[in-house]
Amino acid sequence: MKHNIWRIVAIVFICAFLTVSILYANGIGWKQGGTAPADGNAALSLWNDGTGAKQKLINYVETVTKEGGEDFIPVKDRIAVFDMDGTLACETFYTYYDTMMFIEYCLVDHPERVSDELKEVAASIKPGYVADETLARNFAKAYAGMTVEEFYDYAVRFGQKKTASFNNMRYIDNFYLPMAELVKYLYDNGFEIWVISGTERTTTRAIVANSPIRDYVEPEHVIGTDFEVKQKGHEDEPSNMDFKYVNGDELVLTGGFIQKNLNANKSIYVEREIGKRPVLAFGNSGSDTSMMNYATDERNPYKAEAYMIVADDSEREWGAQDWAAKSAEYASKGFIPISMRQDFAKIYPDGITKAERQYVPAEIPRTEETDQAA
Image 1: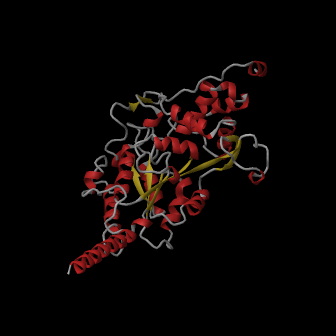
Image 2: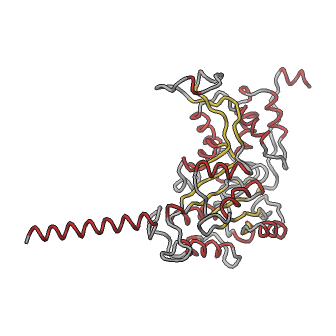
Image 3: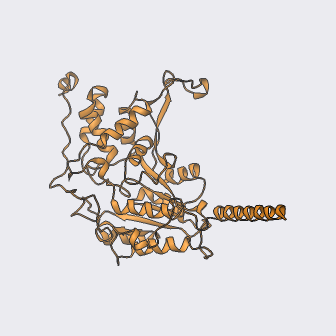
Protein backbone atom coordinates (compact mmCIF):
# COMPACT_ATOMS: atom_id res chain seq x y z
CA MET A 1 0.00 0.00 0.00
CA LYS A 2 2.81 2.40 0.96
CA HIS A 3 4.58 1.68 -2.33
CA ASN A 4 1.39 2.46 -4.26
CA ILE A 5 1.01 5.85 -2.51
CA TRP A 6 4.56 6.84 -3.41
CA ARG A 7 4.00 5.64 -6.95
CA ILE A 8 0.89 7.85 -7.22
CA VAL A 9 2.79 10.83 -5.78
CA ALA A 10 5.60 10.31 -8.28
CA ILE A 11 3.14 10.11 -11.17
CA VAL A 12 1.37 13.30 -10.07
CA PHE A 13 4.72 15.11 -9.75
CA ILE A 14 5.84 13.98 -13.21
CA CYS A 15 2.54 15.04 -14.77
CA ALA A 16 2.73 18.47 -13.13
CA PHE A 17 6.31 18.92 -14.31
CA LEU A 18 5.41 17.96 -17.87
CA THR A 19 2.41 20.30 -17.87
CA VAL A 20 4.50 23.26 -16.75
CA SER A 21 7.18 22.41 -19.33
CA ILE A 22 4.62 22.30 -22.13
CA LEU A 23 3.10 25.60 -21.03
CA TYR A 24 6.53 27.19 -20.93
CA ALA A 25 7.45 25.88 -24.37
CA ASN A 26 4.27 27.32 -25.85
CA GLY A 27 4.54 30.60 -24.04
CA ILE A 28 1.25 30.26 -22.17
CA GLY A 29 1.07 32.56 -19.18
CA TRP A 30 4.85 32.74 -18.83
CA LYS A 31 6.45 36.14 -18.59
CA GLN A 32 10.08 37.19 -18.94
CA GLY A 33 9.84 39.84 -16.28
CA GLY A 34 7.59 38.01 -13.83
CA THR A 35 3.95 39.06 -13.48
CA ALA A 36 2.74 41.16 -16.39
CA PRO A 37 0.86 44.40 -15.67
CA ALA A 38 -2.84 43.69 -15.23
CA ASP A 39 -3.78 47.01 -16.79
CA GLY A 40 -1.97 48.35 -19.85
CA ASN A 41 -3.25 51.85 -19.15
CA ALA A 42 -1.51 51.83 -15.78
CA ALA A 43 1.65 50.35 -17.26
CA LEU A 44 1.80 53.13 -19.87
CA SER A 45 1.07 55.97 -17.46
CA LEU A 46 3.29 58.45 -19.32
CA TRP A 47 1.25 58.11 -22.50
CA ASN A 48 -1.76 60.34 -23.11
CA ASP A 49 -5.15 58.68 -23.51
CA GLY A 50 -7.34 59.24 -26.51
CA THR A 51 -4.68 59.88 -29.15
CA GLY A 52 -4.72 56.37 -30.61
CA ALA A 53 -1.16 55.08 -30.36
CA LYS A 54 -1.39 54.04 -26.70
CA GLN A 55 -4.59 52.07 -27.19
CA LYS A 56 -3.26 50.42 -30.36
CA LEU A 57 -0.21 49.22 -28.44
CA ILE A 58 -2.31 47.88 -25.57
CA ASN A 59 -4.75 46.18 -27.95
CA TYR A 60 -1.90 44.51 -29.81
CA VAL A 61 -0.22 43.20 -26.66
CA GLU A 62 -3.49 41.92 -25.19
CA THR A 63 -4.39 40.22 -28.49
CA VAL A 64 -1.11 38.38 -29.08
CA THR A 65 -0.69 37.30 -25.45
CA LYS A 66 -4.22 35.95 -25.06
CA GLU A 67 -4.06 32.20 -24.55
CA GLY A 68 -6.10 30.37 -27.16
CA GLY A 69 -6.64 33.50 -29.22
CA GLU A 70 -6.41 33.45 -33.00
CA ASP A 71 -3.39 35.80 -32.97
CA PHE A 72 -1.62 34.31 -29.95
CA ILE A 73 2.19 34.42 -30.19
CA PRO A 74 4.31 32.03 -28.09
CA VAL A 75 6.86 33.71 -25.83
CA LYS A 76 9.77 32.30 -27.85
CA ASP A 77 8.58 34.28 -30.89
CA ARG A 78 7.70 37.56 -29.19
CA ILE A 79 10.52 39.64 -30.63
CA ALA A 80 10.38 43.45 -30.42
CA VAL A 81 13.05 45.55 -32.14
CA PHE A 82 13.75 49.21 -31.39
CA ASP A 83 15.90 51.72 -33.18
CA MET A 84 17.68 53.82 -30.52
CA ASP A 85 18.45 57.37 -31.67
CA GLY A 86 15.23 59.28 -32.24
CA THR A 87 13.12 56.31 -31.16
CA LEU A 88 14.22 55.50 -27.63
CA ALA A 89 16.40 58.57 -27.09
CA CYS A 90 16.90 62.10 -28.38
CA GLU A 91 18.79 62.55 -31.64
CA THR A 92 17.55 65.97 -32.66
CA PHE A 93 20.35 68.46 -33.13
CA TYR A 94 23.09 68.49 -30.47
CA THR A 95 21.89 65.83 -28.10
CA TYR A 96 22.73 62.96 -30.46
CA TYR A 97 24.91 60.84 -28.18
CA ASP A 98 27.51 59.38 -30.54
CA THR A 99 27.90 62.57 -32.59
CA MET A 100 28.49 64.68 -29.50
CA MET A 101 30.83 62.03 -28.12
CA PHE A 102 32.93 62.31 -31.27
CA ILE A 103 32.99 66.12 -31.09
CA GLU A 104 33.96 66.14 -27.41
CA TYR A 105 36.59 63.42 -27.87
CA CYS A 106 38.28 65.28 -30.75
CA LEU A 107 37.98 68.86 -29.53
CA VAL A 108 37.86 68.69 -25.72
CA ASP A 109 38.87 65.41 -24.12
CA HIS A 110 41.63 64.03 -26.36
CA PRO A 111 42.60 66.40 -29.18
CA GLU A 112 46.17 65.13 -28.81
CA ARG A 113 45.09 61.69 -30.01
CA VAL A 114 43.41 62.66 -33.26
CA SER A 115 44.53 64.22 -36.51
CA ASP A 116 43.86 67.82 -37.47
CA GLU A 117 41.64 66.47 -40.24
CA LEU A 118 39.38 64.80 -37.67
CA LYS A 119 39.29 67.97 -35.59
CA GLU A 120 38.15 69.85 -38.69
CA VAL A 121 35.40 67.28 -39.22
CA ALA A 122 34.28 67.52 -35.59
CA ALA A 123 34.17 71.33 -35.68
CA SER A 124 32.28 71.38 -38.97
CA ILE A 125 29.25 69.46 -37.69
CA LYS A 126 26.25 71.79 -37.56
CA PRO A 127 22.45 71.38 -37.29
CA GLY A 128 21.20 69.55 -40.35
CA TYR A 129 24.33 67.42 -40.72
CA VAL A 130 23.96 63.95 -42.24
CA ALA A 131 24.84 61.00 -40.00
CA ASP A 132 25.95 58.91 -42.95
CA GLU A 133 28.62 56.30 -43.59
CA THR A 134 31.25 58.94 -44.36
CA LEU A 135 30.85 60.46 -40.90
CA ALA A 136 30.80 57.00 -39.29
CA ARG A 137 34.14 56.22 -40.93
CA ASN A 138 35.59 59.33 -39.28
CA PHE A 139 34.16 58.21 -35.94
CA ALA A 140 35.99 54.90 -36.35
CA LYS A 141 39.28 56.65 -37.11
CA ALA A 142 39.04 58.82 -34.00
CA TYR A 143 39.07 55.90 -31.57
CA ALA A 144 41.85 53.90 -33.23
CA GLY A 145 44.17 52.23 -30.73
CA MET A 146 41.66 52.06 -27.87
CA THR A 147 40.83 48.66 -26.42
CA VAL A 148 37.18 47.69 -26.52
CA GLU A 149 37.05 48.10 -22.73
CA GLU A 150 38.60 51.58 -22.90
CA PHE A 151 36.17 52.60 -25.60
CA TYR A 152 33.20 51.27 -23.61
CA ASP A 153 34.36 53.09 -20.48
CA TYR A 154 34.82 56.35 -22.38
CA ALA A 155 31.28 56.09 -23.76
CA VAL A 156 29.99 55.63 -20.20
CA ARG A 157 32.00 58.60 -18.89
CA PHE A 158 30.83 60.80 -21.74
CA GLY A 159 27.23 60.09 -20.73
CA GLN A 160 27.81 61.98 -17.48
CA LYS A 161 28.55 65.21 -19.35
CA LYS A 162 25.76 67.75 -19.67
CA THR A 163 24.33 68.92 -22.97
CA ALA A 164 23.90 72.65 -23.44
CA SER A 165 20.77 72.03 -25.54
CA PHE A 166 18.73 71.18 -22.42
CA ASN A 167 18.78 72.45 -18.86
CA ASN A 168 19.97 69.87 -16.29
CA MET A 169 20.39 67.04 -18.80
CA ARG A 170 23.33 64.67 -18.94
CA TYR A 171 23.62 62.91 -22.27
CA ILE A 172 22.61 59.61 -20.65
CA ASP A 173 19.37 61.28 -19.48
CA ASN A 174 18.13 61.73 -23.04
CA PHE A 175 15.92 58.62 -23.11
CA TYR A 176 12.24 59.23 -23.76
CA LEU A 177 10.51 58.05 -20.58
CA PRO A 178 7.30 56.89 -22.34
CA MET A 179 9.39 54.65 -24.63
CA ALA A 180 11.33 53.26 -21.66
CA GLU A 181 7.96 52.54 -20.06
CA LEU A 182 6.85 50.77 -23.24
CA VAL A 183 9.99 48.60 -23.24
CA LYS A 184 9.22 47.46 -19.70
CA TYR A 185 5.56 46.84 -20.56
CA LEU A 186 6.55 44.58 -23.46
CA TYR A 187 9.25 42.83 -21.43
CA ASP A 188 6.75 42.12 -18.65
CA ASN A 189 4.48 40.56 -21.25
CA GLY A 190 7.12 38.11 -22.41
CA PHE A 191 8.67 40.05 -25.29
CA GLU A 192 12.38 39.79 -26.00
CA ILE A 193 13.75 43.31 -26.51
CA TRP A 194 16.40 44.08 -29.13
CA VAL A 195 17.99 47.46 -29.85
CA ILE A 196 18.96 47.86 -33.53
CA SER A 197 20.92 51.10 -33.79
CA GLY A 198 22.85 53.13 -36.33
CA THR A 199 25.21 54.02 -33.47
CA GLU A 200 28.31 51.84 -33.14
CA ARG A 201 27.66 48.59 -31.28
CA THR A 202 29.96 49.00 -28.23
CA THR A 203 28.75 52.58 -27.76
CA THR A 204 25.14 51.41 -27.94
CA ARG A 205 25.80 48.71 -25.35
CA ALA A 206 27.35 51.28 -23.02
CA ILE A 207 24.39 53.63 -23.49
CA VAL A 208 21.75 50.93 -22.98
CA ALA A 209 23.53 49.48 -19.93
CA ASN A 210 23.32 52.85 -18.18
CA SER A 211 19.84 53.83 -19.32
CA PRO A 212 16.29 53.33 -17.97
CA ILE A 213 15.96 50.18 -20.13
CA ARG A 214 19.10 48.48 -18.80
CA ASP A 215 17.17 45.71 -17.01
CA TYR A 216 15.27 44.69 -20.13
CA VAL A 217 17.96 44.47 -22.85
CA GLU A 218 20.81 41.97 -22.72
CA PRO A 219 24.20 43.01 -24.23
CA GLU A 220 23.84 40.30 -26.85
CA HIS A 221 20.53 41.85 -27.88
CA VAL A 222 22.22 45.03 -29.08
CA ILE A 223 23.01 45.39 -32.79
CA GLY A 224 24.81 48.46 -34.07
CA THR A 225 27.20 49.86 -36.63
CA ASP A 226 30.45 47.88 -36.58
CA PHE A 227 33.97 49.32 -36.39
CA GLU A 228 36.88 47.00 -37.07
CA VAL A 229 38.31 45.27 -34.00
CA LYS A 230 41.49 43.19 -34.03
CA GLN A 231 43.85 41.55 -31.61
CA LYS A 232 46.51 43.95 -30.36
CA GLY A 233 49.82 43.37 -32.14
CA HIS A 234 48.09 41.89 -35.18
CA GLU A 235 46.29 44.99 -36.48
CA ASP A 236 48.05 44.91 -39.85
CA GLU A 237 47.63 41.20 -40.55
CA PRO A 238 45.00 40.64 -43.24
CA SER A 239 43.39 37.52 -41.75
CA ASN A 240 42.43 36.75 -38.16
CA MET A 241 42.94 33.10 -39.09
CA ASP A 242 46.71 33.64 -38.96
CA PHE A 243 46.91 33.92 -35.17
CA LYS A 244 45.10 32.91 -31.97
CA TYR A 245 43.89 34.74 -28.88
CA VAL A 246 45.75 33.78 -25.70
CA ASN A 247 45.34 34.74 -22.05
CA GLY A 248 45.97 38.45 -21.51
CA ASP A 249 45.58 39.54 -25.12
CA GLU A 250 43.67 42.75 -25.86
CA LEU A 251 41.10 43.52 -28.54
CA VAL A 252 41.57 46.99 -30.04
CA LEU A 253 39.84 49.30 -32.48
CA THR A 254 41.99 49.66 -35.59
CA GLY A 255 40.33 52.77 -36.99
CA GLY A 256 38.81 50.64 -39.71
CA PHE A 257 35.12 50.59 -40.56
CA ILE A 258 32.97 47.56 -41.35
CA GLN A 259 29.30 48.46 -41.86
CA LYS A 260 26.77 51.18 -41.05
CA ASN A 261 23.60 49.70 -39.58
CA LEU A 262 21.03 51.67 -41.56
CA ASN A 263 18.53 51.00 -44.36
CA ALA A 264 18.75 47.46 -45.80
CA ASN A 265 21.58 46.60 -43.41
CA LYS A 266 19.08 46.74 -40.54
CA SER A 267 16.94 43.95 -41.96
CA ILE A 268 20.05 41.95 -42.89
CA TYR A 269 21.47 42.27 -39.39
CA VAL A 270 18.12 41.25 -37.87
CA GLU A 271 18.03 38.10 -40.01
CA ARG A 272 21.68 37.30 -39.35
CA GLU A 273 21.70 37.85 -35.59
CA ILE A 274 18.13 37.14 -34.48
CA GLY A 275 17.23 34.55 -37.10
CA LYS A 276 13.48 35.22 -37.10
CA ARG A 277 11.14 38.03 -38.02
CA PRO A 278 10.25 40.45 -35.22
CA VAL A 279 6.57 40.95 -34.49
CA LEU A 280 6.96 44.53 -33.28
CA ALA A 281 9.28 47.19 -34.72
CA PHE A 282 9.83 50.80 -33.67
CA GLY A 283 11.71 53.49 -35.59
CA ASN A 284 11.69 57.19 -36.39
CA SER A 285 13.08 57.74 -39.89
CA GLY A 286 13.38 56.41 -43.40
CA SER A 287 16.58 54.58 -42.45
CA ASP A 288 14.45 52.32 -40.20
CA THR A 289 11.87 51.38 -42.81
CA SER A 290 13.70 48.26 -44.00
CA MET A 291 13.54 46.86 -40.47
CA MET A 292 9.87 47.82 -40.18
CA ASN A 293 8.99 46.25 -43.52
CA TYR A 294 10.92 43.10 -42.64
CA ALA A 295 8.79 42.72 -39.50
CA THR A 296 5.47 43.39 -41.22
CA ASP A 297 6.22 41.38 -44.36
CA GLU A 298 3.21 39.23 -45.28
CA ARG A 299 5.38 36.13 -44.84
CA ASN A 300 5.63 36.76 -41.10
CA PRO A 301 3.66 33.87 -39.56
CA TYR A 302 2.41 36.14 -36.77
CA LYS A 303 0.42 39.34 -36.48
CA ALA A 304 3.03 42.14 -36.62
CA GLU A 305 2.94 45.92 -36.26
CA ALA A 306 5.41 48.75 -36.85
CA TYR A 307 5.40 52.17 -35.16
CA MET A 308 7.15 55.41 -36.13
CA ILE A 309 8.02 58.24 -33.73
CA VAL A 310 7.38 61.74 -35.10
CA ALA A 311 9.55 64.45 -33.49
CA ASP A 312 6.90 67.18 -33.57
CA ASP A 313 7.33 68.65 -30.08
CA SER A 314 9.08 72.03 -30.30
CA GLU A 315 8.25 73.08 -26.73
CA ARG A 316 9.66 70.25 -24.62
CA GLU A 317 12.07 69.05 -27.31
CA TRP A 318 13.90 70.33 -30.39
CA GLY A 319 11.60 68.48 -32.78
CA ALA A 320 10.58 70.31 -35.94
CA GLN A 321 8.74 67.64 -37.94
CA ASP A 322 5.28 68.38 -39.27
CA TRP A 323 2.83 65.92 -37.73
CA ALA A 324 0.23 66.05 -40.49
CA ALA A 325 2.76 65.38 -43.25
CA LYS A 326 4.82 62.78 -41.41
CA SER A 327 1.91 60.85 -39.96
CA ALA A 328 0.28 60.64 -43.38
CA GLU A 329 3.54 59.47 -44.95
CA TYR A 330 4.05 56.73 -42.37
CA ALA A 331 0.42 55.63 -42.40
CA SER A 332 0.59 55.23 -46.18
CA LYS A 333 3.44 52.76 -45.67
CA GLY A 334 1.50 50.73 -43.14
CA PHE A 335 3.25 52.14 -40.06
CA ILE A 336 1.46 53.51 -36.99
CA PRO A 337 2.70 57.05 -36.21
CA ILE A 338 3.41 58.20 -32.64
CA SER A 339 3.37 61.93 -31.91
CA MET A 340 5.81 63.12 -29.25
CA ARG A 341 3.66 66.22 -28.73
CA GLN A 342 0.29 64.46 -28.54
CA ASP A 343 1.10 60.96 -27.28
CA PHE A 344 3.81 61.64 -24.68
CA ALA A 345 2.46 63.03 -21.41
CA LYS A 346 6.03 63.48 -20.25
CA ILE A 347 9.30 63.15 -22.16
CA TYR A 348 12.25 63.59 -19.80
CA PRO A 349 12.89 63.31 -16.03
CA ASP A 350 11.75 66.12 -13.75
CA GLY A 351 13.91 69.23 -13.89
CA ILE A 352 14.99 68.79 -17.52
CA THR A 353 13.78 71.53 -19.83
CA LYS A 354 14.63 72.73 -23.30
CA ALA A 355 17.37 75.37 -23.31
CA GLU A 356 16.95 78.76 -24.96
CA ARG A 357 19.59 78.04 -27.59
CA GLN A 358 21.36 75.10 -29.21
CA TYR A 359 24.74 73.73 -28.26
CA VAL A 360 27.64 75.68 -29.80
CA PRO A 361 30.63 73.48 -30.80
CA ALA A 362 34.04 74.20 -29.33
CA GLU A 363 36.73 75.85 -31.42
CA ILE A 364 39.37 73.65 -33.03
CA PRO A 365 42.34 73.45 -30.63
CA ARG A 366 45.24 75.41 -32.11
CA THR A 367 48.34 73.44 -33.08
CA GLU A 368 51.44 74.32 -35.05
CA GLU A 369 49.99 72.57 -38.11
CA THR A 370 46.64 74.40 -37.96
CA ASP A 371 48.39 77.74 -37.43
CA GLN A 372 50.52 77.13 -40.51
CA ALA A 373 47.44 76.12 -42.51
CA ALA A 374 45.69 79.31 -41.45
